Image (cartoon, rainbow, N blue to C red):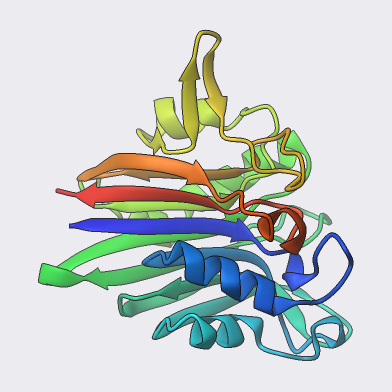
Length: 245
C-alpha cells in the first residue's frame, strides 16, 4: 500500500504577514491531501490564536478522523506543541519530553497508527532545539525512550519534524548508527543535500526532515511551493510518498 506523509511547522498559523489565518494552513493541507500529517508549533487555548484548539480545528476542517496533540510549552494561558493528524486509527499516543536542562521545552509525539491488513506504523513527530549539542542530547533521549526501544528493526518506523539541523549533523547518527534512511536528502555531485524548507519565502536551510526504516520504500519527496505556502508559515511543508511492502 502507498501512504503520503507531510511534516509542517505551521508557526501557530501566524504567517509572515503576522496575521493569524488558520484557513491558509487548512487550504494547503487539503491540497496536499496526505494520509498522515505531522505538525509542529500548534497552539491550544492561547490568546494569540483565539484560544482555539488548532489541532482539532485543522483536523476537522481537513476531514482527518483521528488526531493527537502533545503539549511541549506552557504559556501564561494555553499551550503549544506537536500534533499528528491521521486517516488511520491511532492505537497509542504519548508525548516524550526532550527538554535539556534549562533550555526551552521541546518534545516528540509518538503515535502508533493502525494501517489496513492489521499492519502498524510507529510515528515520531518531533521539534528539536536550536543548538547542535542540545539536538544531539535530544536525539539520545529519543532513542533511549521506552517508546522507541520497544520497536524491532523490521517494524515500520518514521521519525520526522522540525529538526533545526542546519548542518545535517544528526544525519550520521540516524543513518549510520540507527539504520534509518532519509527521505528528504537529495543526491548531488557534492554528496547528500537536505531538501530546503526554511525560510518559506526563499528556502536556504533543510530544517524539516523525514527519516524512515522497516519494510518501507520511498517513492518521492517534494516541498509544497504554491504561493500561499510562502506566507502562511515561516516553513514550507515537505511531503513524502512511501510504499509499504
